[in-house]
Length: 493
Image (tube, rainbow, N blue to C red; front, side):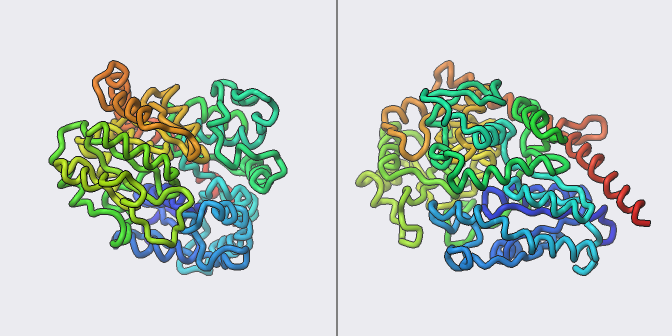
């Protein structure tokens, strides 16, 4: 604790796509000289502790949570371990964490936990809007951290508050309070949003949570101001509180969480395989840890890859509806002989189960494109390496990220939407060739991706004579947060 500037509490929602950006933020703030207190449920804390580098000083606090009290399976503390139809249940019951969160803050303020002093601030997940009121009861600065694009979350926020698709019979519509985002199509709605009517459980949760964001003292976004202005300006206008773009916040090679040894593929095998390929000739395919395409879509994608005869790495997960507790055998869901043909044909492709070292793969010079669900973590990992994307959004803000990447930034071609989209292998071939081939549009996409890479590098630059926009934004955040702590300390003397 000696020499630290003060304590910062981080409190993410229990999902891999939320915990990982928060962990990356923890390392970032630790490098700035702050002591990090990371709060989550016991199983998530246990997993994080076992995977951290030995030199990390992040302190973890367990928050009790009994999933069986809410009709969830035993030890269901993270969305990744739940079937899709139960993921929302974990979100729905998350406000029950409030009493335990309040108890932890109380103990920290009263210095009952180790040698920790009263926190400088609490940085919480956007699903935990209720945490602002609790935090302020102790006179502590509160911020929301969004591991998303400003544009994607602005669309998400506006959609849920206004349900614009419910007020028109047309397939296209605009957002009444975010018209600069352009037109949207009903196929860009997640399943839960498409059926929302304002009285369904998901709407009820959102209508309770979203308005509470105004109670926070500010919002941090894992994005870059230069290419995400519209979304950031939406929240500055809508919430009337400071909004800072501090991205990219990503795990570095020396602090990344290690996967279980029984999953995926080793980094060494990946690198050895990639080293044998020419520059920009490999397509990387991964739809994230939470999403899965349908069995028929999986078959069409395999047929397209077989017809294209390009190099690829495909991180394959069980198709939608597959029993997550059953053994998954890819060969049973792919065209007959596909895997054998790929392996025999000069090792043209790698089929990887569940997990691959994505950051290192995308950083390799042989990668020429990324077929992605457009989850924001993956998008940033692609863009920092100048890799253009082929979009296949499936849930939440992914549809809106794809729209931002294609229409505003110009680094993506959308190929399909969701798990019910009738995608044919011929269409897949066309989009992959467009991005990976020598067409004029393909060249423009790759050129733009390289421009964005440099833009991100500039935003993150932290030198004596120059600080990029994201570095300045994080400095501004502390300039706002620290005076509040100092005022409170003076008032209590």
